[in-house]
Image (cartoon, rainbow, N blue to C red; front, side, top):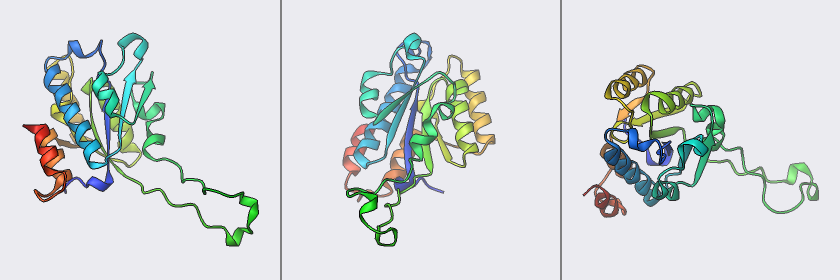
Length: 201
């Protein structure tokens, strides 16, 4: 099973200024998160960020925050508990123009359906706390979760690796940044191939 570009959304969890210095591979983890966010923008994949208690932990990396369509402020460790699911599954759009009473019900056009994307490409910090709890709650909501391992960090390798073991056991797909980007593209003939390839080099 390959990632489907048209079914994907990107969620980047807690790359915050006072949290990142504690991550052993912080430069690589953040660089891969930025690659994912830039590719998402190039390819039209919705991208969201989360920030855990930003008053204490600070905001996300500014470049990353700029690439996200919205950033969810949360106090729960799971972003799903604090409103992320509603962002990923927006309600049906209301009919544009006109008063609903201006036409009899049988002549009104139904609201346009929202194209639902059911795959979340997920990365963030810390892998064994906020990322893990967000992923497990998204799985409970029957959302397919793909965790980008080389864009995730924890303060210790043991905690990070234990998180990956639990996530795989819960049905999440474990992947890497380059795997995501090339699966979104599928072909060297994709119009954005060279732009996305430049993010990797």
